[in-house]
Image 1 (cartoon, helix red, strand yellow):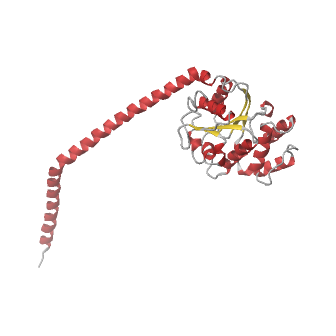
Image 2 (cartoon, rainbow, N blue to C red; image 1 turned 180 degrees about the vertical axis):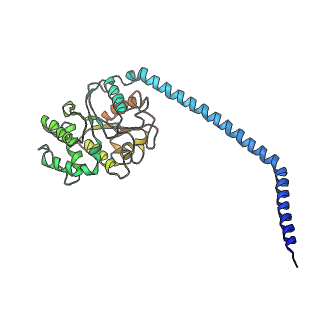
Image 3 (tube, rainbow, N blue to C red; image 1 turned 90 degrees about the vertical axis):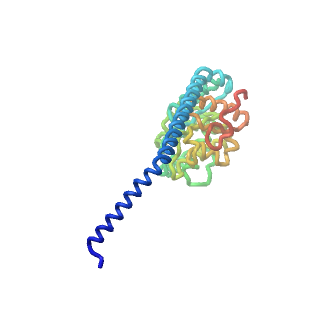
Length: 303
């Protein structure tokens, strides 16, 4: 008969065997495992050092590009847009810094900047669609035939594109823009905007994932192109994603007629925008930057 004492001795023997196995295993494996871990740590430290060096090199290149752009940007774009009239349209989310930098390079290129038309977040809000519908159908340029739709995005795009490129009577532009301003769909003074057929559309960041805002932006660009405008769409890297306006243009049917720049917030971005605009004026379309869908880092400097 197995006694309680036998059970105790058996359990103690099992634990002693486990302890002995751990000690023996640690003794046998300690050398190889420790050496391997030390090698891995050493390798990771080397990788970290190499990556830090690469980051420093890249930062130096970025700083160098910024210094080059500041020193020679005006010379690179000089006379590229001589005697052209250029309008900036800022989509919701476009940074003030991007607008200012691109405006400065447009002027350095010899163009006359006819204004900076800034759309508000309300313009791309689905709840504004009915208000835009009422505004446009109730009062629009007599010579403009509106699309057969009740979609505020398309109606707004149709009437804005018409007057911004110079369609209709001179008073139509102020009337339409004042109407949009009264609904808080724009934040720019209507009296500071003059029409132009050469246009830079600026849009930074992604648009909301629901798709309404992105489609509203794309509808406006498509309508401007249909009215004969020469267009460059400029934005940051985030704008080149699937939900960003640069990405939407590159994935749409207007890719063949509308140029894009996906690094407009970089030191060289505004210069690329002006060079791309000079190309598109001569019916040469390109897509520039470092994001998906770009044809080259920047336009041909000698074009």
